[in-house]
Length: 638
Picture 1 (cartoon, helix red, strand yellow):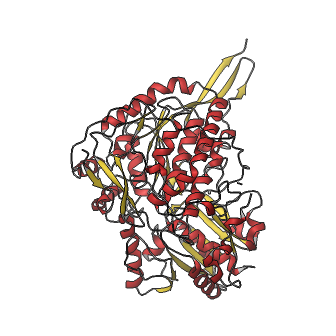
Picture 2: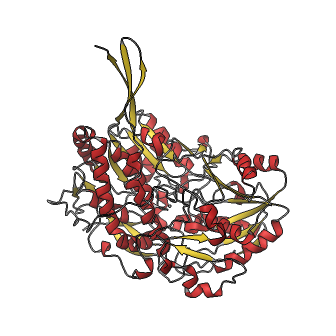
Picture 3: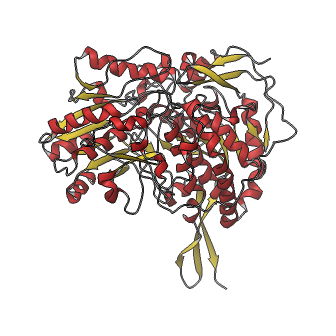
């Protein structure tokens, strides 16, 4: 019999920290590990391997890949091993295809209540397109919140039906096989809409990690010698298999993460281009110098065993970002999913075993001890981490001991700037709200500080307050719901602190504010009217559905206020004056600036943060080269 420790409120061992804590406030790493070990309720032993890996059936038919312009949600918080008791401040936790008019929101029952004078929205696949900005948004590339061409009709999905992927046990996948869970202590995985357990997963031991590293090291020599084209072909085949799993993954993702069915489908589909388009971003050898006697060749050599630490806000998307980059560059990768959302990731890695040699793609599930074991492991060559700024510092510190490479995509407090020359106030208001509340605000590149020019502030404020009334919050499986619960109890409590402060400081609440006591980790969509710039709500990242609306008048002062933040992940600017918007955008200290669009991504475009929002980048040549060692090869001429 396995013993159980839950990932509900007792999972404070998986806490994520606010970026406000300075390095001096970070406890010694060894103390953290010792402290967390004390939370272990029972001893555990390494599991044994099953005799078969139970590969999945091949996908039926041939998948025709979509066009190369795509949108995806990015960033977020990682599953952490730090304990909330150790920190003075806590963050609490750690986007095509032809338009399907069956997903038109105006055909949903609740859409009949939306006044046409306010806005008209059309559901396209998984995002919401503002009709008034269609021409602006869809010229060349697509948005995180505005994808198109869904390959699956979510209107035909069985809403509220449990995923078939729950039928089999969940476990680590090591050396091409699912590990027998006998002897492992387990964690409960909780549905945040009901607070009920939906599955259990085993907790890895140090021996489990060593087994995965052993398998990856054994696989690497042969795998690294495969050609780029060979790996690209396997990656596309894997993508076909993954695509066939999406209907069931959508239901499982809604159950473990909490997001609505539409946005769960959105996450599942938004990664599809990475299976085909990423391989086109080639790291080919090239002659960088040549003289009478020699030529110098620049080449990129895979690092070896890599590890990806994945958060709970977009567990499928962010895991597959890491997996696809590692695979195409010839590396082996071990995934550590969030203990709050490990289920979809396990099933997706199980499916990979049919396409890649044993040991190339693996997954190890665990509690707060697992993170340090992975980052400190002497035979892991690179860490790709998505999570909070404070934990990112711990990861960097841990990696430094063995001089391993790392990519850190960390927290953000992204500004959203609204200029006064708005031709369509209602449409801009709608998209600002979608940017702020997408995934119930649990997105590191969500709009977290909305700066509106004082000339239109009152009108824009009134429009926001009206539009937000028509966005429904509730269990992700319910008809018409756009925004689900907070993912876990710890983050729910953290977000609650911002609601409490707003009331305590007597801030003017434009919408929401009152929290209904019921099952599930739900908060209302809340807009706070012009709180002080030094308030916690403006200075920190709530990572929940509460956002401050702020006035601005002078451009220089606006930029100064924006750039005073320690974070610099993303920013959005909304204006009919593109030149003016670009001028402001170029002054903002953030890794990505989106003008008149909602957080777009593409496999060829690097994504990373400035300042305390990260080190390195995902995607593009910059992201792929981070999985490689650059090598200079001097070859004499005959």
